[in-house]
Length: 424
Ligand SMILES: Nc1ncnc2c1ncn2[C@@H]1O[C@H](COP(=O)(O)OP(=O)(O)OP(=O)(O)O)[C@@H](O)[C@H]1O
Ligand SMILES: [Mg+2]
Image 1 (cartoon, helix red, strand yellow):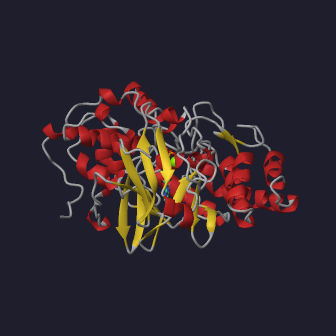
Image 2 (tube, helix red, strand yellow):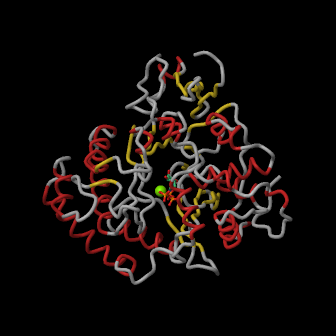
Image 3 (cartoon, protein in one colour):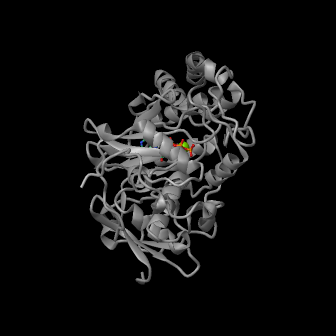
């Protein structure tokens, strides 16, 4: 492949292949010859192991900045993108001058999952959890989300600039494990961290596999949700890709049914029964607990040399609404008023016995009574937002729409608070 604007992709120090930007802003990919002999297909539906030059289709420009989904998975979503834009702004680089390949280069070795990009424009930032003041981070995130300048932009960027999702996050290393701590979005009520933690306990009780979860104390809200990273194990990066990445699907709008999710799970995991059951349980849990934001980036697969493709542990299980008041992923064609029979249809057509589907439904329904206070509206599930906050929320749903109106240059703000000390 010709060397114009290119970036090399690595996995565990092995050269996977090369990305090259084309004139129309789409980004082509070609595997390294040795990888074709010794590696695995990093995106089985779009990038089979062959010597071809692969070009993503036209829609990739809107969905993934011109990339194949598996590489877009390395890029942050709206929060990380906002941080990078503000950070670059603070050092005099404009958003318009930064291409998608530049953004991947800024991610470099620090992206979610295991892919790394060379030459990188970043250096890893080693953060020790005990030195962080989480309430101060939450306040600074709130400043940023309110379109005000923050004097901690470089620290926030290094702490969570490569994270996915809408909500502010930071990464930590603690007790030999890697963690993500989530902070509320503007629309989230004070109980959102505790609520996600309670959801995680209930999901685990219902047999859903999740990583370790904790609730971080706070003096200003009911705590922050903390979860162990499944894309890091004992210091090793685990290859991870979201359903959106594998399917090249638009995660911002309803594009799938759980039937597609089941078929994809069966195809990738070679019909591994445990993964099918997991998928079934997560679907039931989401339906019974009003987790309507069940979009294609809220499910992932992992690939390891030992086990091949497997469903990743569940994440982002919490009370959530959508603008249109229905599940983003439909069940048997329905986004709301979903019946047990719809769930059973998805289960049985994927090969799970009807009696087993019914047993899981009964068990998960009973367990989710623990979450009744959230589901039945005793607690506020959403804050009333000002017009400005609604505009920002729109920005989070449709990144890039209003970012140009953000205040200029955070460097002019005098440092007042310290949320973490930089490790030299
Ligand atoms: N425990 C975890 N280990 C590894 N990656 C994770 C974990 N939890 C979440 N992620 C990744 O981080 C991304 C964002 O996390 P999450 O979905 O919880 O955040 P969010 O901001 O609430 O998302 P959304 O925009 O869907 O509301 C996920 O899409 C997933 O790729
Ligand atoms: Mg999410």
